[in-house]
Every structure is written in structure tokens, then in C-alpha cells.
Image (tube, rainbow, N blue to C red; front, side, top):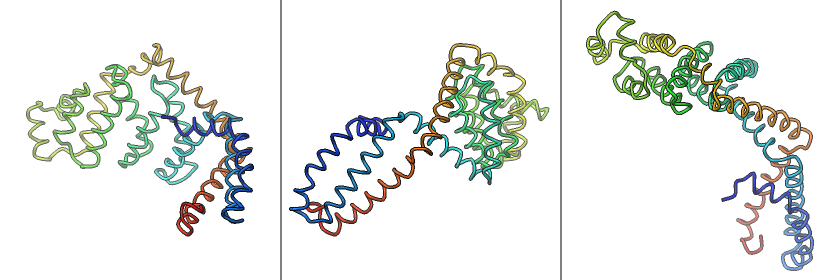
Length: 282
């Protein structure tokens, strides 16, 4: 099935012929349905041609990459409370991503999840560093990061440590029970009893687990970043940033956002027209 981007490119490539077909049929439209339908037809031809020509000329990839990263930036603005904080955070995250074998896009998603679960912004990269080192050393990649992030986020949301999340970490390759026992100076069995009784807070547990991961998996990301998958990730990140920068300029200079808004407005009007006069006339 063709993607939206592919369809837009095809529309752009064939917009000249499409406009000719629409123009050739306008006399018939006017005779059959009147001037209102003719106005809709002309507007459709103009909008489709403009959008198709603009996007096919510059390449959908850069425009869509720019739009996707902008949407992500808006999400961080909401989570952090201001555009300035979001920009500073994303700059730090991009620098962090450049030193890891993981792609910036995946790390953005991880950071958004942690922020959504009310981790402090200044704690996000240290937490992600510990999780990323573990995933790098264990070879579990972004999937491993997602699993560990989910377990730690669930701990945060519950306000206390529970066996379910400890099991999730164990399944991901993290010896969370041992880390917690070491931090409390107790046996694993005794710690399990305390967790079962709800006596270990999420703050205490998460800190112990993160510190244990930092100790056992230190340098995991750095080592993996020098291997082929890590190098490929860096190449992909750099490519996306080039596309993003190109797309930013193209969206602004060609008014692509405004043209898409125009198409959306036209389709809304057309839908109302269908409701009023019926699909045959519309």
C-alpha cells in the first residue's frame, strides 16, 4: 500500500495532467451542476497542483522529517513547560544521542515517556545513560531500552517497588533484586518480603537499581557505538538532521504548511457541500 508521502509525490509528478483533465471537464460540470460546483472544481485543481508541485520539487523526505521532529519538539514544550526549556533539553539529548549506538528518534520517545511519568528533567539523561549502557552491553537495543524504561516508569507511577516490575527488569537482563538488596544491606529474600509488604518506596528502589546498572554496565553504549550498528545509527541520525534542516527551509519558503491547511479547509467545505446537496451533485 502506498504511503501518504508516496501518494503526494505521485500527485506532484502527475499534477499537470490532472489539472488539464479537470480544466477539460469544467464546461461539463458547469452545464450539469452550475457555477458553485465549478468553483469547487477550480479550487481543487489549484490546491492539488500547488501541493503536488511543491512537495515533488523538494522531496517529501525532508519535509516530512522536519514536520515529524517539529511535532516532537512541541510535545517536549508541553512536557517541560516552555519552548526554551524544550530547546535546551533537545540540544542536550542530541549530544547524548551522538555518543550512543541508538538513534535520536528512539531516545526522544524514551525521554518523553520518562518526563510523562514525572521524572525530573535533569534526571532524564543520567537515567537513560544507565539504561542505554545496560541495553548496549546486553545487546538488546532499543527494545531493551523500552522494556527497562517501562518497568522503571511503572515503579515511579506506583510510588513503591512491586515484584511485577522487578520481574520485568530481570527478564530484560537486569539483576534488580541484587541491586536493591546490596543498597539496603539485606538478603534478597528479606528484600522480597519488604517489597511484598509495600515497604520500599519507588525513589529508594529506582535509585538503587540505576546505581547498580551504572556500576555493572558502565561504558556499554560507548563500546557498541564503535561497532557497525552503532556507526550506522550515527549515520542515520546525521542524515535525518540534514533532511530536517532542509525541510525547515523548504516548508517556510514554499508555504507547504499553508497549502496543506488550504487543502484541509477545502475538503471540509466539500464535505459540507456533499451533506447539503448530495454526493451526486457534489
